[in-house]
Length: 373
Image (tube, rainbow, N blue to C red; front, side, top):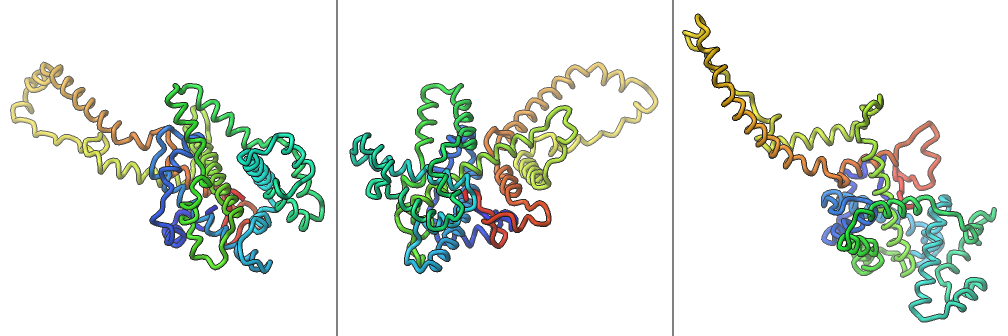
């Protein structure tokens, strides 16, 4: 949930947003999450740090807006109602959140040992004791819903295309895994921000806020944080696919200026770190011809005679240069999501098209475009 049009990865934005939770990092957990969401088995640490910065900045801004809504209601804490109010105009993501809240209620019932028959009865009757989260959402949406569209989402069983696509991608990802890799993949899929609630609260620095979120609101924030990571990975995979040069495609050269600028900087740093690369190796200094070679062809015939030795030495040098170049470009040509893919994904997501585009999104404020809501 980062500002896209206003340079979400700028030092000023990230520095101000992470000044409080800078000592706490979710980079290691984010690498595992990104792997389970479709990234390479070993995601880049630089990409995970960038994703963490985007997620943290957007959650901080979301908390600020939720605190303002809470003040308007005259409440002393940030409650789920404030977050539901901010998400009310995005039906698909709100439906996804309502389903998550229902699953959380269902899970808490299972942990408490309630029978399955009682679960069905509680779902039909809407018992507030066992359907706490769902009851909160239903009561609030009922108070603001004037057309019946929001309440209809509780009965809507429409297939979530985004979730379905992620499941299909995970299935394709596991086809070539062995048992050890699949076990690691399953363990990564179980990671979430809600399982580290105290660290997540410290990461957002909730203790310094005047209006603090309650327990259910923190659960929703943890869910939105994970959804932000998932959507960043979804968009970055699309960007990476677009960046692949396609043979015969006349528009394959029309890639973004951000991507070109990033790769130019990567190549420049790679050449500095790999002085033996062919691009960074200066051409050999030509030797001055001897006086006799200007008047006779003996030098030419001699060079032709030693041509095989020269070719062997040239091939050896080329092999060494190829090895050094390959080692230098491992990160640039890796299957892992690069930081440039994340930057380009956020730029595209917040790109405003058309004269009325600033008024089309309910979640843009001061150039801010939220990813998960």
